[in-house]
Image (cartoon, rainbow, N blue to C red; front, side, top):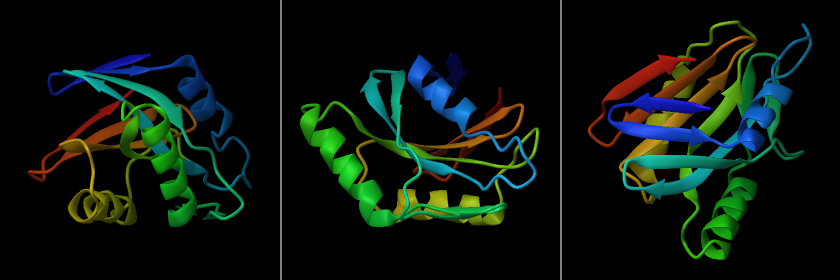
Length: 151
């Protein structure tokens, strides 16, 4: 899968697409799932090649997902150092129990906090929300601009 947004090309590996599809909230009692987005940046090409999967330390309910900060940081550090600093943290992903998902105020606050208070190696962060049918794909840059697309 490929998305072009704000002059950047985002490429999704088959593994990433499969993880998003696997965690869709298809049943009425499925909890939200989520994790972090990792990948490589090569000029204006962003290759999204890893998504962390939910862990037992994460908290979730039908309408909420809160990833465990420490376990996510361990994954980020591991991937960054073991890829010779090629694979980096790009953002967050989670599911919503709706066909055409939109971020909640909690989601928007979380991604703003991530870009404002963490050391990141990009000038943007990605927020992906997998719905039952469509994927919300948003970019938050350091200037505070939001760019979104539903695919």
